[in-house]
Length: 257
Length: 372
Image (cartoon, rainbow over all chains, first blue to last red; front, side):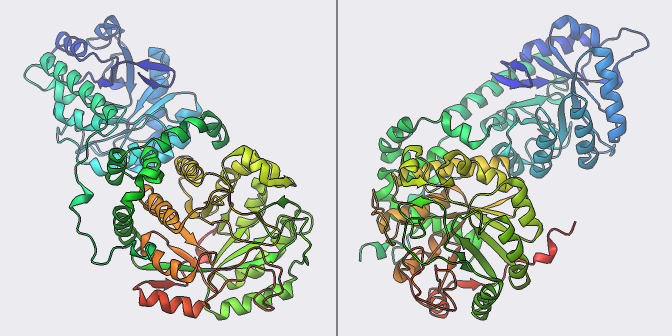
């Protein structure tokens, strides 16, 4: 079981709600994925109409909602969105996303840390989306975030774990859950992240843009479970010291004399 | 949760059982999967790892070379005082030992520093016995600015202090604090610390956390090898290091691995750590933690020290005196323990150079820190 803040999750696959062809496909895919935490952009909700094609079916499906601040370009905007979301949806959980760059949607580290501190101080359960930056993740942990969500590669790019070296460092050092977010384009990528010891992965585009999102969601479910099991079982050795050449003069020969 | 609380949750008996029942397969696995992994550290410290000492040494040498090059940091201890308000049955400074007691005046300190500086050292370790009223925070605060004028890197090995006291010292330029637990076995700890404030096991275990919070650059950990089962003590030291790195990531950490040495009125080791055992210990920690600094004092013999450079040791002292005022007036018999390597720093360095290692005298610029 994965514990995030005060909630336990049996599924380590988190999903999103964007880019689906219909809300029926979206709900079908979420159900097939087994996901219990689903993120959703606050900017997509039609708050004036009081009902819309995302929120109603999600609420009906019973999954936990993770509203996100997508669209916010600085800390101030993100805090505003978070407060709005807490008021409208009644949840203190917030996926903090701040990307001032419209091309690659790279998260802004400075504004994200600033907003994370403000939101943690206000009692939010903050899950920040960040670059795979180990020091930034340390800072976010220190201000009280419930988890960190470093990216595998640019969001929506399906390029996999381009940041693998840094994700490993983050996973090694973190005292809070590490959820690999963004760039996971194939079940094998998700599995790799789980094998490395990630607490969970968040996958949206790879499922939503597949020819058969429901089938793909099922594939991700298996991959995440297998990756987690492999991590727990302990991966085998990939290189052997026996292959190394010994120095001419053994380093410990002096112990014999 | 402090490390003291984490330590309480660990079962010593279970750890010990696991440590002594490890087999070759676990050692082989640990050899390639060693970094940051406490179960690998356990395997490498176990008796089962002894036949793998050469493999461990090869790997440790590679890692050390990659991380530290051929550099060996040079430092020297300067004993401020041998006054002590504790009785510890392994230490020459023990309160009940009949020995001439003194602490350095500012002038005497200056004389000592001139000699040390004259040998080329720029990194200094200030040492004292634990005597709060005469050699306490006020004394340290009055002496530290004098030391900082002459040395870029200043470390201290004195009694554990309060967090705000550490902060005062950091503001005066203190760079590092060495504080050794001696043993992680509370029963053994009580047995050897029979009088004084040092009897408080918990206060000592939690000291590195207070030090870390004060913003110091480096913290030195250590156990006195020979007081208790060295394998288990070393493993728990690994747990401590791991805890501190997780919680206080801005600090650097260093390790000292002193073997119990003869001293006035002192006890003999309970468990003898052989040269081979010490090599195993050093290599195990290098494999466990690539960036860990490991320092080696003149407690060890010259020939043994010369062979350890490549295997993980990163800092050494040379030409040390372990008595207050001992550089100006050697052999006054006020020393803490007997020195084993009595070569001068120049002789030590020549031997080091011949082995292909490079002494590093200056590695810090104190003006860059604490600018605010």
